[in-house]
Image (cartoon, rainbow, N blue to C red; front, top):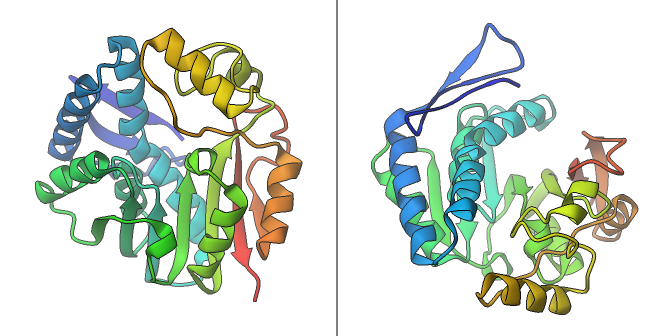
Length: 265
């Protein structure tokens, strides 16, 4: 996948793997999203270096969403899907998915400000098939044909519990797309991808959070537990999933694991 990225801080186009095809992106939407994100991170007193890193990650969510949609389209089996973007963050992955897959997309997140950002750019856009909700998946009583969980599983307090909840949230034969960080990736060990602090990724989470809080002079109490490949596949099996596609079968030392798994009734 190629990308025509920022031009004056705005995305204009995302190229697919076929160079003759392209997905057009609303530049005003991206400009508004960036404005909301910069304001959010500056209010949280992050360094400019971290802010720029996080902004780039969020804006790149459109490309990632397009990529996810193209990978899943072959397996979806339906022309109109009910889709959940679990841990939707700024909502830009949802937007990317909407450029490829037809259906109703619901983005949920427990971060009030991220939902505010999502609704902010959505209100000023022409997008009509996405809805963002501040909700906890444990109390969200709806069923979906497809759930997208990208760069989220490492942040939940109990991966086993949440995989069971996601399984319960799927319709029969429903699909779950998961991308999550690899614990054996040398880069993640050398420079943690969340806070750019070296050598903390393999530490026990409470000790890790104390070290990062001290180094950044900012209290960090969130979870970011990375997964071993064999551990993740065991969790899938225990939660009642069958692997449909391992997009990175030799990802023992790559940045992330990436799977499409199927609910088995």
